[in-house]
Image (cartoon, rainbow, N blue to C red; front, side, top):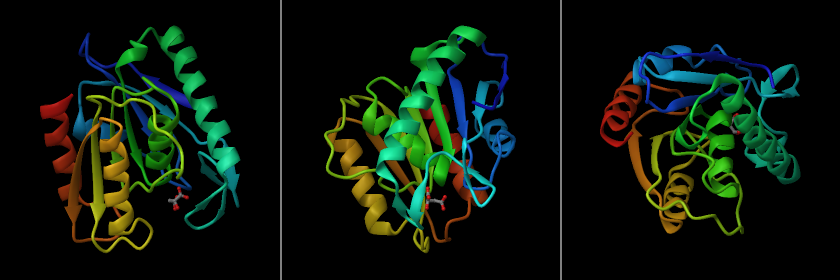
Length: 201
Ligand code: MLT
């Protein structure tokens, strides 16, 4: 997968997995990672699906309607890539914390939904429920930050609460931070994520 890796300064810190939104690249979330965990190493991946030329992490049939088969396949592909990257860059595979926005948050959510121990934690900015009707693996004690907007037309409040409840049902420690905005990432949300990171990771 197209990606970049940055070696941070903290010897034993977790590695952040950066996952951009639709139309982004592996460079998009670097400033966000620097704001949240300035010393951390990061692996930033570019989504390998193109929608009208815009990179994404999995196909969708329409806005908010995911191609489930593709989602499952691409999630497994990303999980395998994490194994390879951990060997190549010599980071601790058991300490990968996802940092995703929008479509990137959705594939991070899908890692949590489908692959046990795939993530040691996750910061999900404006995620949706990646898939319904499946049994989640154990997420006991996995800390998850969800950044949401009460006026987000893509990730509506009920869906955010549904995601929180599914994650908590599997044992995750979910924290939802609300802003009064829409789908965009606001300064207040980034600050809340940085504070959460210091306390939970
Ligand atoms: C998705 O397709 O993952 C969500 O609709 C968010 C986005 O617009 O990328």
